[in-house]
Amino acid sequence: MTPAESAPGTPPGHIRSRLVVPVLAFCGMVVAVMQTLVVPLLPHVPELTGASPAAAGWLVTVTLLTGAVFTPVLGRVGDMYGKRRVLLASLGVLTLGSVLCAVSSDIGVLITGRALQGTALAVIPLGISIIRDELPAERVLPSIALMSSTLGIGAAIGLPLAAVVTENFDWHTMFWASAALGLLDLLLVLGIVPESGARSRGRFDVPGTLGLAAVLVGVLLVITQGSGWGWTSALTLGLLGASAAVGLLWGWYELRTTSPIMDLRVSARPAVLLTNVAALLIGFSFYANSLVTAQLVQEPTTTGYGLGASIVVSGICLLPGGLAMVALSPLSARISATYGPRTALALAAVVMTAGYLIRFFTSHSLWLIVAGATVVSCGTAIAYSALPVLVMRAVPVSETASANGLNTLMRSVGQASCSAVVTAVLARVTFVAAGRTAPTLHAYLLIFLIAAGAALAALVAALLLPSDRPGRRAPRDGDRSGGTVAVSTPTSTARGNA
Image 1 (cartoon, one colour):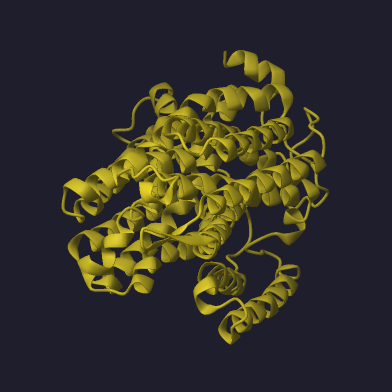
Image 2: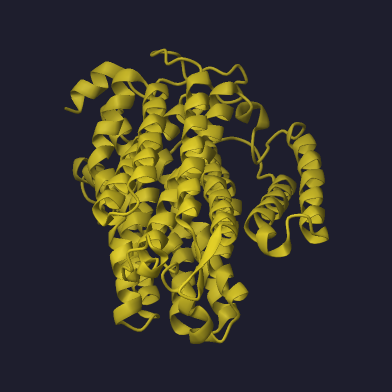
């Protein structure tokens, strides 16, 4: 019996077991909502706070940076010291960040609060790891599928909700609401989620953590700020060069230390490396769907293609996709269980490509735009359920959280890269309509083609993965052979979940 099972006030084991996944999934969705919370607010931040547009943009950038740095780090800490403990700490920091944003209109305080919110992105890989440790085998795949999809579900739900709040209430309201949700998450985790007994050995790698943080911050600053700084400016090139130099030193150190923050030998296995490459490409392709849909339908009718929709309508356009991701998570788990996660990932890439082809040819009708966006979301749901299973089949149990943290990080890097590409295309491929400079329809169509190309590249990565062979042994701690873990028995699990 785990400590959580015997703690006073904790529900009986069988009831708690049924509540663990809904609680963890709710935590994941709250975190995902936090990531997109300020997007509808950004155009209004300068007038609300007196900040410059560039400073306002940091409300999004800073969450990306802190999320990227803390997701793999907190995953490793969770593997070493307890996943539930780190999960609670992450939710506590999210709640604190929300309160800071709720009580102030100062841009410095807001950026600090958003930085604290960004650290909570680690909740998703930690939740996946708890599911693997605590649930019976027949429930693992569908539960992981739902937990992994919360990143997309929360984004799709968060945008319209934030838009409604922005248009109808004081803008601080959404931060008070997020603080309340964070507190609710804390209470639910304390009462329902057990602590995992699985631990990895060794000491925490402080030099490796600092090196990883320096590399990630440098690379992501180049990706997110390079367009404004100039891609060939001394600052951009200097930061990129410094990140590369630090990265080489960091890699040299990590290969020689006995307890690295990131096991590069494990990460270099084809099963792990190609899965992370696919995660980056899927993250890129998925994020284009979210970024472009809202802006496309809001373009004024004077452009000849815009629909002139309100910010609320533009957010609602993404809602069917979020609901489809919820509905598809059991099916996506069944696909992974029956045919293997490699096949599921390949299918997801094909569906996402088809969605962008629909979008390429149907960008003048609101309902067809929503249909195309929903198809892309369906493909994303299948991909997001397959990626953590592929990771867990290739790493030891004691490295589950850190390995899934790296995979989540790669999705974030893909999203950051997508944001930079979308911004550059929409800023450069323009024309003048009714005295206003606006992106051309061809700019949007080009983005759809680029996103479809990223999905096709993810398909190639999926096809290059080692074939699914059920029943292979799980890697043991310290194992460098590259064996994989059978998370569940494929066909029997699928039937058991029917």
